Length: 249
Image 1 (cartoon, rainbow, N blue to C red):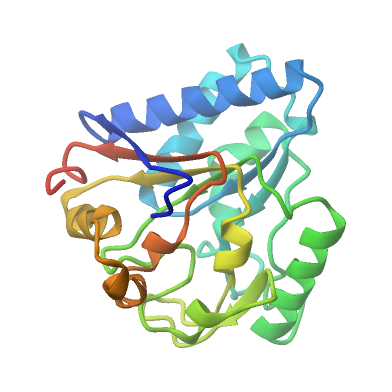
Image 2 (image 1 turned 90 degrees about the vertical axis):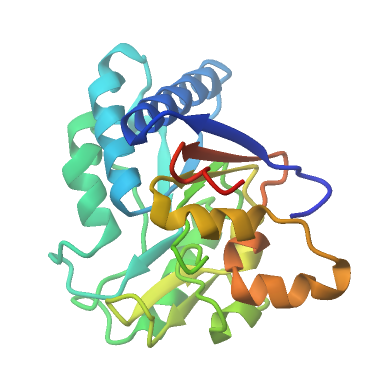
């Protein structure tokens, strides 16, 4: 972790309590930003706990006052599969809450139904980020895998070394599907606030490794082993954990 954004750790009893807390905090932040005349840009993630959070957002949204037509949404990574695949993060999010709340300013990498390769999808997404204001997210929500991956940046994969680009193609992902598009460390680290959303005992060791202090000489190796170590917000980094995920810290 960088010294400029020391992580906050917020532990909840279980996944349900975690989902409700994160959804409520997000809606409060969005309402405050809109009251100040801002158009917030938010990065979404996929996964089981993200799906629970999204469903809580849908449940709580009517009372929040948030105008979802004035929220711009992005994804930290996307699966390069057909547009109608349930593996697509955007498909999961639409089912859970996007359609229900009326969000329509939603951006992600093109699917394999739209372009011929993950490289084309990554280039297209990077162009959208540049032209549609996605370069500096107000809030970026991320998960972490049991192996310590973040977005689709996996331990030891070439994408960890990407420089000068916002989005990259990822092949031979150790977690299916094998072809993906991911934001790079450079893009992820431009977010003002980074929220890690982590639930379950299976993630506990990855959380421990991501938050562990290491000697400067060991930092590069620790990052390659646990890529989630490489992402911090410019002004805030918060780890929202349930008790099981926090059990080793």
